[in-house]
Length: 94
Image (cartoon, rainbow, N blue to C red; front, side, top):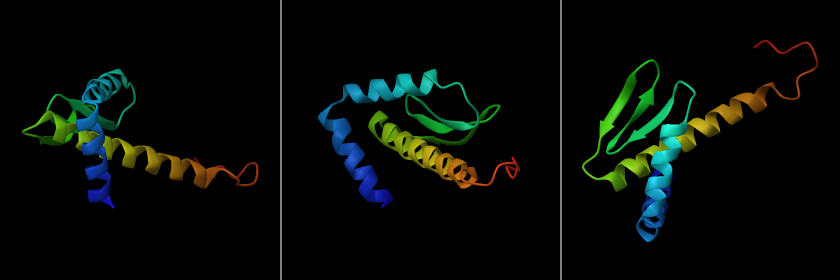
C-alpha cells in the first residue's frame, strides 16, 4: 500500500507541480509538535528539534515522503482520538 500511495502522489505532483509549493507552505504553517515537516529536500519529524531526518536528492521525492508521513501521522491521531470517543462519561483516562 505504501508504494501504491507514493506512486499515486508522485503522479499527482508531476501533473501539477504547484502542489509541491502548497505542501511546502502547509508544512511551514504547522504549529504543533511532534509532527512531520518538509523543508525543501529535507523531511523529518520536528519535536523540539529535527529527528528522523531524510535528505532527498529531489524535491519531488521529499514532497512524496512528507505527504506519506503526514498522512500516517494524521491517521494515527484520528484513530487514537476515535478510540476515546464513545466511552461512558467519566471514563476518559487521558
